[in-house]
Length: 119
Image 1: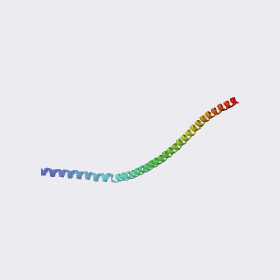
Image 2: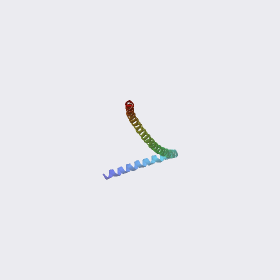
Image 3: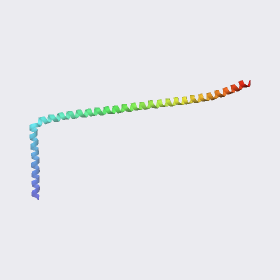
Image 4: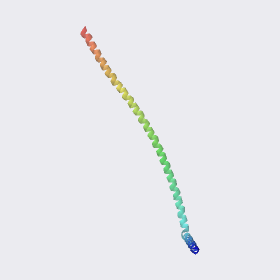
């Protein structure tokens, strides 16, 4: 079995050496072009990451603006509801006072009628 182990190592060495030879040939033929492409891809990658960060910043800014606006709207709505409740309460009080005044007026008219009739 020791002989088989040696053969496997030799095959692996040959595969590795073939791969490195292919890499060397590829670099000789396409070396500069591939390096240019790699450089351009790196520039593009950096630009994309920069734009992504800018968009995330804009999203955060919009979220903040929306939260501020929602808080403002909620406050305005609460103020208006409070004013409406106050106005409603005042109107109810006015109506109740008008009813009391009508009752009082009716009683006064009856008393006046009795006095006039009594004289």
